[in-house]
Image (tube, rainbow, N blue to C red; front, side, top):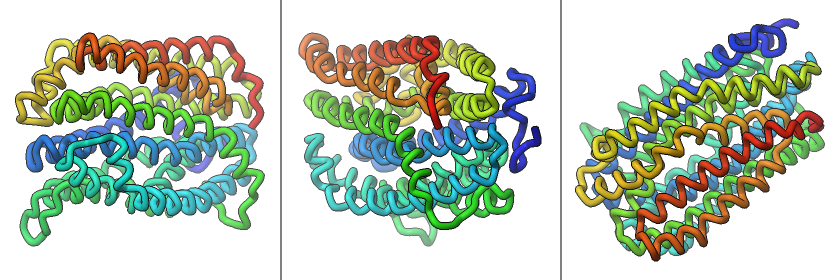
Length: 446
């Protein structure tokens, strides 16, 4: 079977460990590079704007997750459809699916931006954030929402390359874009030289710049490699993409809404607790993104192998990809247990924020050992097109955080909230392992 569009490896015939490494490592590197930029962005905000600015960015993240969840609806659905078509050696149909997804997601991004900007004041009113945090948060989130169409497009571009088995080229493009944005970030925040001082708006603009430029350049590269084709939209294909991706999007939306509710619980303990909640997620995201990267690889490998009629090889790919996250998990656990103050201090000079974030990180350390089980196997299940059972399972466990966090906060304060977050993350990971082991995904139709 020939390689597709400059793919790094043949996902259906090459040695499986080689396939996982060659496809997974660039995907992980890309995810970590984005995380590094976001973490650096938070550090600039924390040091130059202050605790209120960091809390504003932190609380905005919960709504940004919701926006990203809508983008992932198309990304997950497209990965399943396009990788299955490539596995069946129907590359032209895969290219048309990418073209349809790009057009559809452009409209979806515009609608999301318009609705988000219209309801922007209510988003922060719902979380009952302090006035200073609300004012800065509206600046940050409003700027981010304006760039939603480009951000949505980036997710489609990334899924198209991944479904074809090419993760190296997106990584190279991401390196170039991130270097430029990392230089612009502090300049836009602080107003160095001829640039105006934009504060948190500058941080959001730098983020949009990374993914927006990748969207534009990525479409051109897809066209050059024959991985995208445009024409009259085939709505049955869009319906399939949405059907597969919608449960994943719903999971993300519910997850975001639950954190909005939990933010109200955390707000009772002051701005340091709010900042610590977001800061803790920033630091945890390093391990989470390792799982996201390997999960993206697993989705493409599983999809192509099911398309090629090799479900047993797809099953092995899921477990092998998960196993490769074991060593990073141990390292992350040790780092959070041994150096919580140091890690928190990278993002804030506020002693109260650092102290609260350190408690969060030490509590979250144990979850790092298994947290990739959720993201890797959710990716694998999404690649198979079996997304409803994971959505029901993950959502049920995440919903339990609301009453559990409220109860724990009454007894142990913020420490109780942090433990609820950690233990439910472990539960979701174990649940995904059970679903993958069940094999119900083998018969999913795409």
